[in-house]
Length: 210
Image (tube, rainbow, N blue to C red; front, side, top):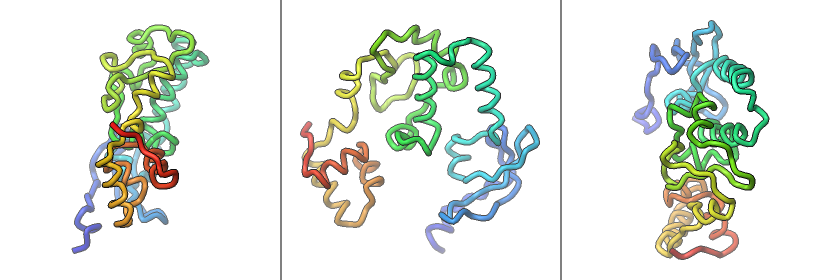
């Protein structure tokens, strides 16, 4: 039995958020397994199995529209910097198409339940954003929640990023993985750093010692 077949999990009949899995749908050209799902609103949508299991897709799109509409009319802060920080946080953690996904949602960084669907709770916990500061997690490997987040300067954020920590041993392992044909994305996951750090070592011959 192939590894691919061995790892196949039948999702038929399971429920993910508002989506009930009806049956397997034709694969995409990328060979990613898709599932035909019925949303509670009545719409049918094909969703990749990995997105269902990761929780990144939980409706046909109606939930996001409802939440956006609710946010727009409930607090009147859609155009504020605090709302932008909250929205960007969600994009990094929930949207695989976001350019920062690999360093956030792609490596398991989550948003606490109190914040994920409530900007009001996020604002209540964090308070107004001081001018010039951005949202930061004090533990860079921790999740987004009241206990782990602060408003911080860009300089503090940059000093706290994972890609500033790449030891000599990790650099040696990086080259071994590269010689074995491992992709840059998977090397970054193996080392617990960003893809830009791997690129820096491979193509600029540089590294930062711990």
